[in-house]
Length: 70
Ligand code: SF4
Image (cartoon, rainbow, N blue to C red):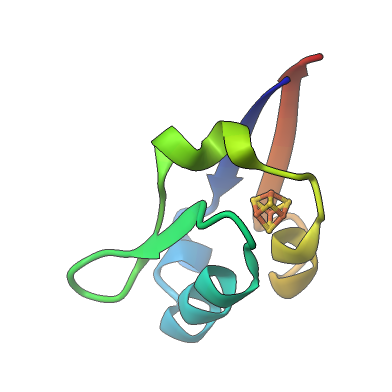
């Protein structure tokens, strides 16, 4: 299965949320850039276990986990 994770720019720039996303994802799909914004670690996206923790940690609709195909 291929998974694509998206985060809205305003959510990515929320440093508290960015830290929370790094904490909750069990497979390190989120990281912090040099200024503390959240970035997606693309090479880890396919490790996503669809746990939904990132979606629940963010305001509604700000983080999306998209299944491309199974
Ligand atoms: S659904 Fe779970 S494994 Fe996938 S990106 Fe979100 S926190 Fe990480």
